[in-house]
Image (cartoon, rainbow, N blue to C red; front, top):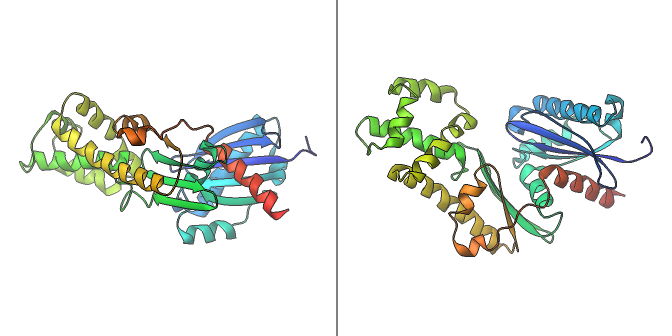
Length: 293
């Protein structure tokens, strides 16, 4: 094993960091999961989680931490679309044999189409789109809950809370959904204020499933909230197809919900992902090796 090249693929998201170790033939030797690795959490935190996941993956592969220095690492990280984070990542010391970086959307796109031309849209707590067509790349959305990701689960959840509060004060129509949401805060606006002071995107995302449940039961408010998200995501998908992506993989926790609400021309371009983002990260590490050899 010591004379065989090892690759580490990292899929670092906001809530978890997934690691996979494989050999040059593509055989999966070990996998592991640690905590969130969005670069906005700070590089000390991110690399701590990456090394922790890599160490556990080595253990699961029957190896130990002495092999960290043998790993050629490809890191797909949420938050890396920011130039400042790219610079910080490149400057940060690491224990690996080699390292390369991209956004988690880029590695997800590589993995989804096994390195071939195509696009992905991740629709979960956040949203982002990525296309790779020849030597061209297009990245869309993914700038964060506060200013972007309109079609995301977090934004759907926040919209539900906002409208529930308006309905509570008689400024919007009360429906079963608004009553249900207010019930989670004991029908007390002050509890919503306290929640909002510390809530992160995942906390708002927890209010997304009731919106889809209410929509299935004919709730008009739920339908309006979801339609805003659908239209936002449709604009991203049309931009990806206009860029020349021949196929699109929808990924993330809301992928199925969004796919069934898309028009026929978009549905006809949707394909299942061939592989995951860890596979894409390992492909990226191998590509870097070829270009620097």
